[in-house]
Length: 389
Image 1 (cartoon, rainbow, N blue to C red):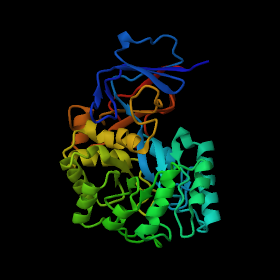
Image 2: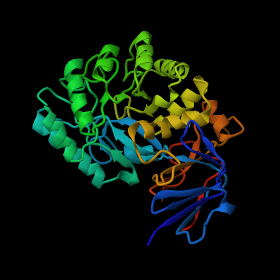
Image 3: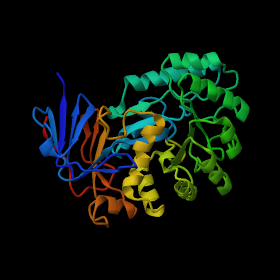
């Protein structure tokens, strides 16, 4: 039996698409966890729904995506000795997480056999166990000297689709890294590079020259993780890279705004994506993506509906995901939000552009309601409600 979800009385629908960020729609229908239709309720077939959500006039957006995390196992991180950090992140509207390497695993193997085994295991355990329903794309091996082309084929054949941050392992030179990135790309594995100063013992400086020579698919934390490159190098990367320009919560806020402003001048805002780079020394940031959206919108003078695209649709497109956009056939992953109680501004978008966080009232993953009122955001003015199902 197919499962039908109807979300009605939507006050505003954000698409995740910078070219058309606000849709003229007050209703959305999902079938078996996939987006089927949206538009005006009077024009849609809302009968026979298994679950009906009355949005009560709040804003619906595609679920947020954190492009840069360092998970370990399950919903636990030894980096901060913290349980349920992924569930907390879901309460911040994030429905999909992408690993940049499971580097905080105690005793992380650095021999080729061991690192391949751990990557495959990490891919499997998050495929088999989704904390609170959150999608965790993991199994991102950190490249080490001694890896050969066959190793990347073996990883891809086993289901690994990501490479951990270049520069966190023993490979520190652009020539070797480029060869491995090319092997990864040949077998459909997407790559990210560390950008900026060292983040943990064993990592090193990755400057603009090495980023350009390596040619990864994502310029990881272009605003530093934690320490940013000099301004001229950040501008050079924005000018020269066709890759995703990833801005993270755990980086340098000034460098984040420089990246944003440079990308805008170059007509490259579609390359801007967001991550937290947590768990890390800065801790776990359940509201990190929302905070980045509010910061970039308010201080970077970006309309809030565009800033939200940095946190869902842009990442979906750069990462080739089937979530993060209001698109037929895409996963029915949503965050329902409203203006926070007593926050300045006349609307949710106006409030966010003034630098305020929204209140999350519900999250939905694969057409299933996962959370109600967020325990982490400020309380919303209005809350959606499940009226059937």
